Length: 446
Image 1 (tube, rainbow, N blue to C red):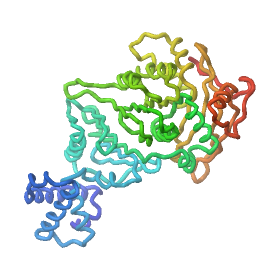
Image 2: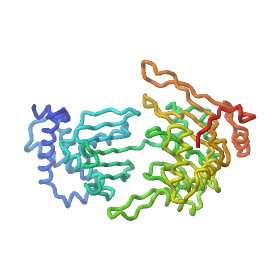
Image 3: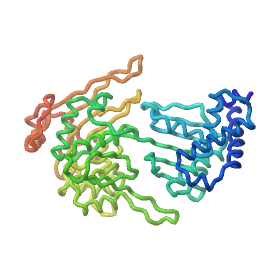
Image 4: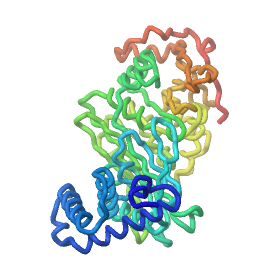
């Protein structure tokens, strides 16, 4: 195969290996001709421009005759390899990609618009992939090797990175880069079909009236996106503390304190957990506490904060339904070192949680609010929820696009009265149920 065709199709089969060798050769030539000390003093953009200029001279002097596009592509690939992340550089530059999944050197997948697709890209070798991984984790002062085969970190540019290597990963070094989209507003989510205007009005009333809201859903359902949109409804004058494993929320208010947990260092020391941050936040005079995701013993601290004066707090939890969300909160709360009976946890949840917003990701990649449920149980009784909004999908058609309609049901009178006292209007699509037995209620076994 000719050099020209290898450059044009560098990722296919044996040609990809040959092209990887070609890139490595020119990278070595480039390193021979540059002054590393001088390069380290330049800004990132100047460094790339200098490398491209020097490499252009090398190709003009020693390389074959190439068209301008082939020459540009070769220069970009060599400089990406020398300075950046090799074959991942164009993927990181593509704003439409929200997730990059590298399953060993020969398998690269991405997520676009909620759909996962495999790309005809590959690394030249496992060694090249490991070099890329080491370059990524070094930017956050972490290392990955057989003694430390897993790394989960946030890059300075905001992406969340997870790495797992052999012997734990049997298919080879595995790298997952999650890129967070820009912050969406609730009206924009209406345009995407995630909810309708009546649901927006109801959720806005809940947030402003200081209801405690739990956003529930599976992986990739848009929990953080919705949480961020809901947080935009919090009044500007309130003091908000956000607590996350990896900082993803992008609040626009002025009085925001962002806290992020910290993993242990190489010696296994210095870890700061979500629970540590939740406890500390209570001493910081918060008006609202927003927990990016509860997944352990910090759930008990969050529930106690919600039920003892920190109304209007928000959190997310991994669960597949509103009932599952409540049961998961109960299970997570029991993971605290505080020995609290399961029955007492019911009391904590019933007094702390007001609303569960359930999100679902459908087969076409769309993400929708499939239920807004109110917790209407009290004390230590079994969890009972009243659905006030739900999405009913239609059977999939030939276009494989999920269609359906949002339905709205009466609100319990105590909830309507709480909104009235807070001077929040009741959206016209929702009536008021005079008695609980006329509501659409379900019971969760606890």
